[in-house]
Image (tube, rainbow, N blue to C red; front, top):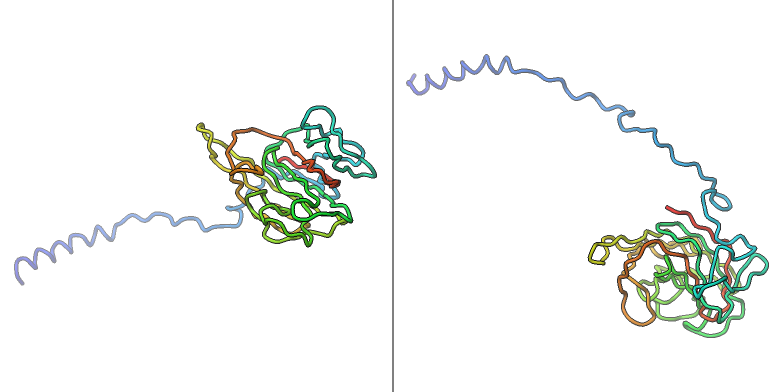
Length: 248
């Protein structure tokens, strides 16, 4: 055997005892169901029907004490038989309370026999934090620009489908809204987002709101904090009922 080969064999023989004596460590403990379970804190118990027990009732069917005119003073819309209706010329109304993230339920009705077409038929609007408009309009067999029909983010995003009921029947919006956050330079750190169910059908699915929703012009970013729920007087006698909100 050559000298080089003898040296290699001798080295391997020398290492064998070291490998044989290598330290053994315990294996990781086997997973059990309890390792991925936690019990605290327990979620708050909320009774769901007919209005969630943790909701703020914004209209009790009796008066508009939770609302005020955007112009100042009491809300001037008409209340009758558990319903309130736009009173033309009195202006928009808004909640006295301000909100950030929320879940909102509201029911609205276009009057039977409404006349007009496009934007001139059953027009109102629901403004989130007083700024971002979800359109209210008679979109039952009434075509208009799609980012201005019912359940659109006005002048931005049309609904996924048209879930409108005919005039004289009640519609509902269930809205989950996440308010924006802002950088020091006044731009969005996280933009506002909204999910809208129109008559139980998803029509906006975590949609990003790009900024304000003006009738004329492009969306703009305005720095703001909590804001009211605002309803629009667009001159049509749109009615509302069963309004409640949950702060998230």
